[in-house]
Length: 412
Ligand code: ADP
Ligand code: ASP
Ligand code: MG
Image (tube, rainbow, N blue to C red; front, top):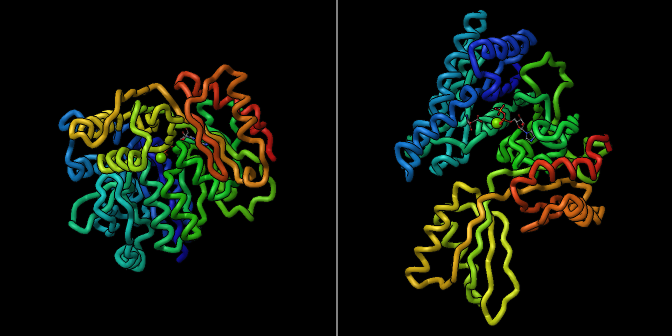
């Protein structure tokens, strides 16, 4: 039997009614003759609640116990989905990550999938089971402990199953009807894309568009998984939603494919460090050892042998960064004047493979922001994206102005 993977995100399984609605959709695919692997998220809001409980209990928590707690939301929805399907006379059972087993490395709270042996689930399909309902986001480490795959990780569970079972397609059901030119919740002119190239989706995801977890796009690209994003709230045809595919499959496209934003960024400046070899290495090795995910970096011009080093990281890692840099200052390993932290910044990025062959996109972006009176604090570019750090209060305005200026409401 051909295999289909269907993933339902938090809002699509937010209550029993929605689980029933999702189960009906699964039933339609079973009736077409597929063996279906359903990946479920926790009910919406559940994972945030669990994370909150862990933070309140133990601010510098043991990540193994964090995973034990936050993985539990998916167990509930997997069981409920299996029961709902059984009530519809569809032979189904639930699987927790360790039962599959979905094997990961030991990087708790950010684990990477290493292997999904398909034998156990295949054997059940051979016995007549039609649907395997798998709890998303979770796996098992080589030490036999529960791991989780990072926020949004059920997308990655889904794509990894699609690769392991050579599924005909991996359908990601969510609360929007596809991938848009930007987040439709902050820009009402956002346009749904019928297709988007893997590389563009990868950039958009890594720059903040949470519609797909970055790692899921990487895996889909590597294993050539046919990946589709669509709404669980509307009736769907086989062409619905957005197909994430190879660049070659897209005939027409705009130079800029989309605008992404990341709200919770912080900018830190290490003031007046010596301008000599080894200082950047000391600062960024320290931050990396402390588990701080540094994103953008700028070094100012030096005056009298001293310079400022500025970098950005997620707001919830500022305390860790401050602690780590203060510790090496006190040990005499790094001499700096002040450490300034600005927690009120956001990152806005434009992405498009067309930028490879067309110049002027950066200039236009900066002009648009300046016309809106928005000051740019840090800039980074790569072949197919330009990102700027700006005051958070201008984030939505910047996204909307860029969407207008690059005419993303019009198809290319
Ligand atoms: P799920 O719970 O189904 O995994 P998520 O909340 O993780 O859903 O992702 C869907 C959300 O992603 C949408 O509600 C939307 O606000 C947001 N989003 C951000 N950027 C985009 C984009 N470019 N296209 C579509 N949705 C986007
Ligand atoms: N429930 C997890 C989260 O909220 C995983 C997911 O939904 O993809 O991050
Ligand atoms: Mg998600």
